[in-house]
Length: 457
Image (cartoon, rainbow, N blue to C red):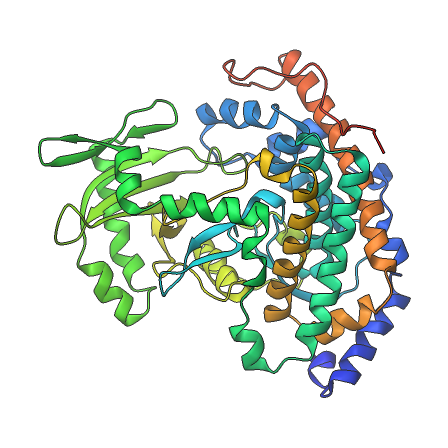
């Protein structure tokens, strides 16, 4: 919040401030998109964004991006960050996820053991214009909806439902007290079909289930499964450095959680390739046991660089550790976070530390078919709105959005336009792979044409 905003004391004054930002960028114009301001090439920018990553793993990332336009979108955050930076924005900042898309919401276990559904990926989090998250989510609903074989009309309805939910939720959050908002959790959506499917998967993802899935037993010892190049053991020296990194990590936990973690001992360490956008970063998994073999704990230690949005966010805080940036951004936007969420440094690199697969569940394409996409759009709107309200000025954002559907419709326009742009970028990217300009793992076939939504009415 700026010094000027801090001086505005009443809800109505803050709403009026937000409303005044329409003079800077109208709600209707938020739907505008044109690539004419781009000063980069698709392939060149994506190559530049991979600096510092492990070169031999990049063909895996590029192959996963080449699987579909939505897969490409998930791995092309640097491109959208550059594009968004060229567009006018309200200047109202909150903590943003930075990579808000439909697959970055999911289920995980809360502090009290209950399953929570919320935003769950914060690698790109930073303080920035709230509408950047909204626009990225809008385009993702279009792309994911097309990939799930929905009609164009159904995809647009989902974006409209998302934007309306975001706007109406922000108006509700503006009226809450600080503590009401701090405690606010979304429960009424838990029976919505896409969310329910995720929660059911999360219920099965127990530590014991993960032990069976990720490891093999040799006598009384458990070892991570070897699955080159996606999961493999490390040289002894590197493994020792990873374990040593847990010592400084413990200090980033609350005192009672330090005591809990201290009761576990390390059993095995491995390297693991995860996701799409994260492929190429150093990502370690650690198996620990408590007092018995029936008490396994899986920890992920994931390398974090600066947020892709950092060059475009003048108000950004300077962090000594990028894992700290990620963890604190997550805590700002979530009501409950992983009890073992923290950070460390290993061999001069920054890392986020968290539990791996602790009752986690994720979305599948079939969850987004038909009305499920619209239902899920509403959930995304409320979840994203909650995160922004917790960490920003809900009344200023609500004042800007107003009570009409002008912004909602603008997000449909932007979602369609940017999804189409991403599909064109995907075509250029896959063409570069076919020409040998971008290395991609041969095991993943390249589609001849990108999938598009059905055109039935």
